[in-house]
Length: 208
Image (tube, rainbow, N blue to C red):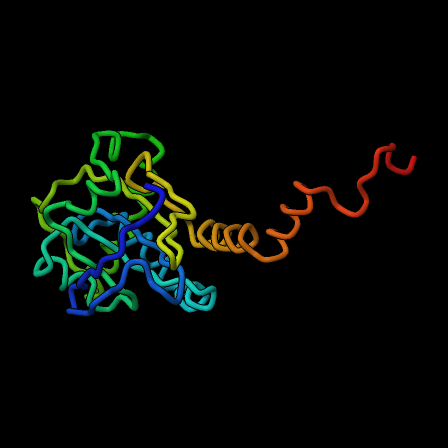
């Protein structure tokens, strides 16, 4: 997908979300099911640096393939929009898949163990809730990240190869910086100069 068609999404709290956003970049995350331990582990890292992400001009929008009623109790304290897509309509549109490698890929195992240990600690302290034993949409979903410009262009994308394969906050901010540098006036002027021949171009060799 190169360009995202304009539409409005509704968060689990009833907020209307314009996608794309006319005023800022959108980091659209596709997660798994409500209460997913590895999702919670990753989203805690987003929460810790959410002010930094917002300062970079990025809005976080996070999708889960769980019903809103099931999802709401798990995400009530998150400082960004969460959208329920139980029919996986947007997952299909954006090419986000499910696969057994989500959990069977050895690269995911350390994160899964960390997520379960951390999640248990948070559940015991009443900060999180246990997921359903039979989550809507299953446990084999793969994550994905999209960075979307105000005009709908997809500036960067990652389709995860296992359950914990997504952009870190540093990687997200790096993509933001790269996209702005690539589309800055100076970058455009340099590209035009390179194509037309800059003031230093001549028919002879450069100074030796």
